[in-house]
Image (tube, rainbow, N blue to C red; front, side, top):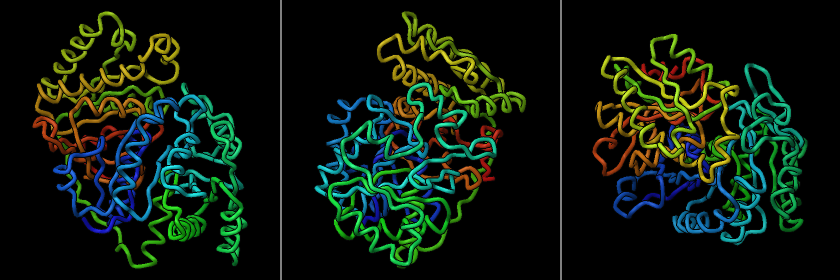
Length: 444
């Protein structure tokens, strides 16, 4: 394999494709695996300069992380990439009990045997910003401090009630957090300031990013710190966007890559477990534009008669597809339809629901020989995609207007889904006409 610039683990599947899109769009060939691949599968992508593994740690416990992150991190370390990235959502939502970013950093820090773990969360491309350690995110054209964000402050599993990322992390780890703030990172002596912070002892080192200029400065610092033995880093795809500046400045990569639009398909199947108001708008827009909408009862899909509910959903979906229409099967139409409280009373039901939606989608693909599909919802995607028997993804069509949910090509040994074109859409991602955009195979 060529020298790897980067390896990474994504804490959910939509976030993992977000990184792949950022890299591939900028000329860094990237393969994303759904687990540690076989040597034969890895060999298929021997010319890639970035290798990722899509995971589910965003919705898992610290105990799960101890058991499952350690072997994946060990495998990623064995690839000997210049940087290894633990990728988290740009909204940083997490808690001590679910999706603990602090715990994941501790595991990676110990395995890579480094005293400093750099962290970048700000990503202006995604309209995410950090200023003096506080996180801000856009919604519907306005920028909110994350603890006042209309959606993320009310996330059904990991609500963000703290914008100060050092304070947020202090609930998840005993490691101190030091900050290279906007003043430090812009200073003429920024290198010396960052080195002083890194030399102060064991630490998580947060780098502020609020603009293209500070993003470039953060990329410079990440690359310098990696050269000093701090190859394991954590954060959003802001890590990649920052590093691209440093790599390009050193002539390690070329310019952006152009992708040809794959064009329209006659029929598209979508399954959605998202309760986001963004996804709600997208579903309503799609049904107004000719998609059939199918309301699924999430409790029925995880209850005593789950198989019957699954069969009924497939029957309904197939009927729409046979009639030549695209179809969206969804378990909620916005926050007002959220059944999360009831679902959480059933042990393991959230994971099970994502798996059932994946099985529904797989049967629709098999029965109707579909070539393109969408899974909506970050946690949903993480569990549903595995049911499609996909082993790896590559980028087919980036969406530069709304980065973070590209159309991908699936790879594997299961014929019905090998070569499938699939998009994984996080709850907050995409314009209102997202589903039609994917159906039509257009990048803007």
